[in-house]
Amino acid sequence: MQGSDHSVVRAVLAGDKDAYGALVRAHSATVFRAAFRIVGNEADAQEIVQEAFLRGYQRLEGFEQRSSFGTWIYRIAVNCALNRVGKTEIAAEFRHGEESDPEEKTVQVAAKDAGPERVLLSREIKAAQEVAMQRLTPVEKTAFVLRHLEDRSMSEIAVVLGIAPNAAKQAVFRAVQKLRRELAPLRGTA
Amino acid sequence: MKHLSEEELIEVYYGEGGAPAVAHLAGCLECSAQFAELQRDLEGARMAAVPERGAEYGERVWEALRPRLVPYEKAVGWHRIFGKGWAQWRVAVLTVGCAALVAAAFFGGRMWERHQKVTTTATNADPQAKQRVVLVVLTDHLDRTERLLVALEHADSSDHAENAQMQSEARELLASNRLYRTTATNAGDPALAGALDRLEGVLAEVANDPNLTARDLQRVRDEMNTEGILFEVRVLLARTPDQGSRLKPAKGASI
Image (cartoon, each protein chain N blue to C red):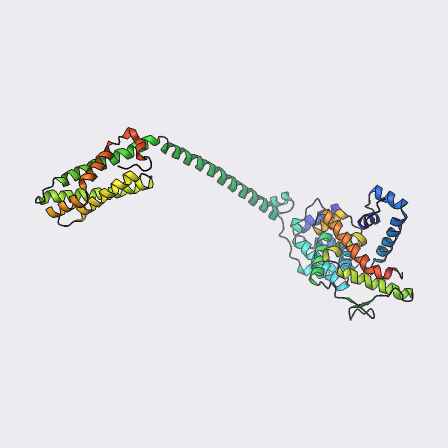
C-alpha cells in the first residue's frame, strides 16, 4: 500500500490531480475516525477530513517519500482537530446540576447514598466522562484519544503532536488522572 | 514495600510497564486493587462509538474536495529526473547558489582583510621612519618660524615691502602651524603644543594686521614675548630627528 501511495503521490506532483482521489478514498475513514474522537461530533469531524486532505494536497511537495502517506495525513488531521478543539475550548463549561442536561450543560452526579439504579448510574458515568474529557487541554485530550482509543504508541503520539516522547507520556498521565478524579464520586456506587 | 505509583499503574495498563512493576503487581494485593479500579475507570472511558463510514464515504470526500484542488504543473523533460518536480530542484539550486555566494563573500572578505593587513603592515613597517619624516617637516616649519621671528625682532617698520613679505610668510606659517599644533595636542605632546600655540598667537597678530606699523611690531614684540618664543623654537629645533622619542616628552616637561 505504501509503495502504491508513493507512486500516486509522484503522479499527483507530475500534474495528475485526479490521482489524489485514490489517496482520499483509501485514507478518509481512518482520518474521520481520529477526527471524530478528538472533536466529538460528526459535522466537525467531516470538516476536518476535508481540511486535512486539502492541506495534504497543498503540502504534497513536502511529503517525504520514505514515510507513509497514511501516517502523514493522519498527523495533519490530528493537528487540524487539535486546532479545532483549541478554538472551541469549552472546558469547565459543564457544571453539576439536578439532572444531566446537555442543553443546560449540567451533569447530574449521583450521591454516594443514592439508590443503585444501574442504568441511571451508567448514564451518569458517561456524563461524568464527557465532563472530564471537556476539562482536558487539547493536547491532553488528543494524547489520551490517540493512546486509549486509537491505540497509538507514545512515540507515535509524540511524532503526531510534535512533542517529546516524555511530554506525550505526561499528557496521557494527566488525562487519565483528571478522568479518574471526575469519576471518583461515582466509584462507590458502581 | 514500595507500592506502584499511579503513573506506573497507567504504564502497566497500556502495556508499557517494566518487568519489575508487572511482577510487583502480581504479588501485591493493594496494588492489584488499585489496578483493578484503574482498569474499570479506563474501560468505561471508551466514549461514544464512532459513526460508521460506508465504502462510499471516501468517494464523497473526494467529490467535495476535487473542485478545490489546483493541479500541480506538469513535469516535463529532464525535470522528471528529479522525481519531486521542478519546484524542489529549484529550491536545491537556490540553496546551492546561496551557499556559494556566502562562501565567496567569506573568502573574499578573508582575502580583503589579508590585503588590508599587508598594506597596513607596509605602512607601519617602520614607525621610526615615519616619525623622522614628521620631524623633518616640523623642523622646516620651525626654521622658517625662527627666521620670521628674527626678522620681526629686527624689523624696520618703515620698510613696507619687508613688512608685506613678513605678513605673507606669517600667513603661510599660520596655516601650517595650526596643523602642527593640533597634531601635537592629539599626540599628547603638551610642550610642543604649548610652544606652537604661543607661536600661533604671534603669527596671527602679524598675518592679520592690515597696516603693520612700527608701533604694532613693538607691541607684538613686547606683549607676546617674541624673544621668549624664539628661544622656545630654538629649543624645539634642538630636538634632532634621531631623538624621535622626544616627540613624546615626559609628563610635565616644559620648554
